[in-house]
Amino acid sequence: MLFIMLAVVVVVIFIVGAGVYWYPFVHPHKNISTSGLVYSLSSTRLLSEFSEDETAATEKYAGEIIDVEGKIVYVIIGDKQTAVVLEDRLSGISVYLDNSFVENHPEMVDVLEANQTATFRGQCDVIIK
Image 1 (tube, rainbow, N blue to C red):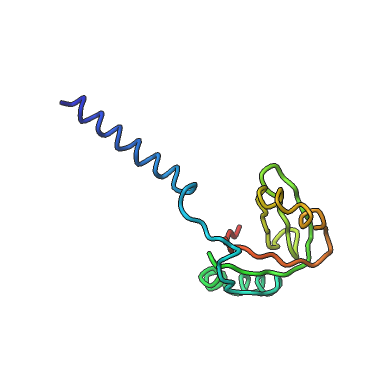
Image 2: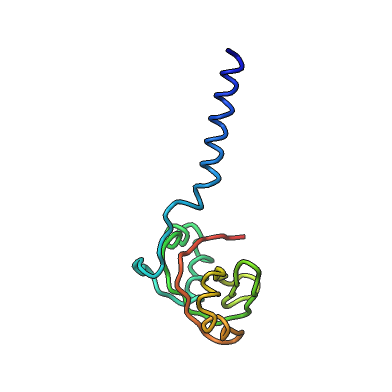
């Protein structure tokens, strides 16, 4: 009897653990191209709003589709994504382009370089450090 109860507990823990692990991979993601744009603003305004009231800015922008325009400080091409930093090297806005976008749109990514202005559309994921 103890063995059966232990086996049931192990199976339940396995199923819950597998569900928690796999959920991020299978839940529906926002389609940026078909989702409605919520905000369009400059990177300096976005930075200003977060520096003035981080909590209010997080409530306003987190998870929303935004267009942000700003001056590129630098571009880092990595194995799984390309990072573009706008406005400030240390406290600027980081825009991450996943490799599927980079592979499907090389003509758009190859022209990105420092000191040019660009506009990016995406979901605002707030990470303040």
